[in-house]
Amino acid sequence: MIEIDGSVGEGGGQILRTSLALSMCTGQPFTLARIRVGRNKPGLMRQHLTCVNAATEVCGAEVHGAEMNSQSLAFTPGKLRAGDYNFNVGTAGSCTLVLQTVWPALLLADAPSRLKLGGGTHNPMAPPFHFLERSYAPLMRKLGANVELTLRRLGFYPAGGGEIEVTIWPAEDKLQPFDLTERGPKQEGFAECFAPALPRKVAQRELEQLGTALGWNEEQLRIGPVRQNEGPGNALLATLVYENLSEVFTQFGEKGVSAEKVARDLVREVRAYQLSEAALGPHLADQWALPLALAVWKRGREATYTCTELTAHAKTNFEVIERFLPVTFLTSVAKAGWRIAVKPT
Image (cartoon, rainbow, N blue to C red; front, side, top):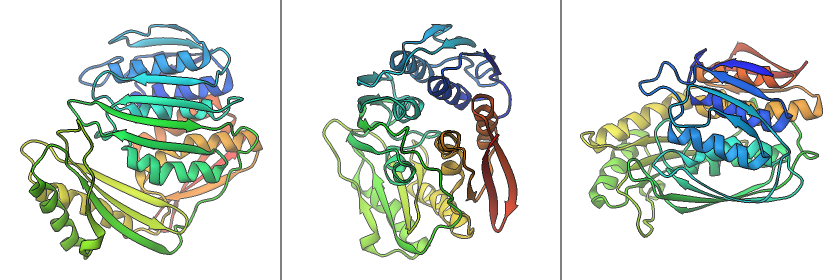
């Protein structure tokens, strides 16, 4: 039984999600105490509880403490089961985080799985759908884990109502760790604004401000399509495409925040990445750690990547992964960033 203190390091929901994912992948039970104890609303929120329930369904786990506001959990996984699943957060809580919880386990299953997920698709503090589609999923395919993602409907806070469909193919025998230390030549850059149920001028102002700051022309500035029953909501995205990867940066509009400030905040993120020579941005560097560690474990071969920033979130994630898998994360300062080596132990 692996015992984990949920208050250590960054102390957030990622500790829970990584523990659930790797417990399913390895068959190791765990207990988690002091869940999100330092947050304004400690314990399991609906989004976290959906992750627990999804993991339970995928592997037939025995669980204790799976209830709202619970600050402790005991999880004993059963056998992984491929299948058709429907997971709905029921609020604007992030359904992409629910997906990332079960994704690693389902790629180790013995047949394809099809998922329908409902909730928030574009949330602060969570990977937006377009980040998963353009940044994360292509690297997963390169790792040997094929996946198809489809956005059916955008979902924003506080209404939610978003919907994603995903197909995950088995990949246990195909996983191959690889190094990702350089971006390669830049191929294109573009921005999009999704602002359903808001005046069109909001999107136009954000894009104009961003385009002026980054020197992007009109063809690089796009207003996203609006589907039925979406919004209100506002997400401004910048996508940078390189030969070896793509990075997606996002800022969210909210009541009382000007369109110009949303754009300026996004420009700041983009420029910080452009000033570095490291491959991955801070969020992708964090989220890439788990699938890469799985591949290193399965193949017994080291892999390395570089990133622009080593966040507290990433460091905590490394520590949790090391509790479940026989791997070690070695970090060192590299040119304009950090170098992360994942080694089998």
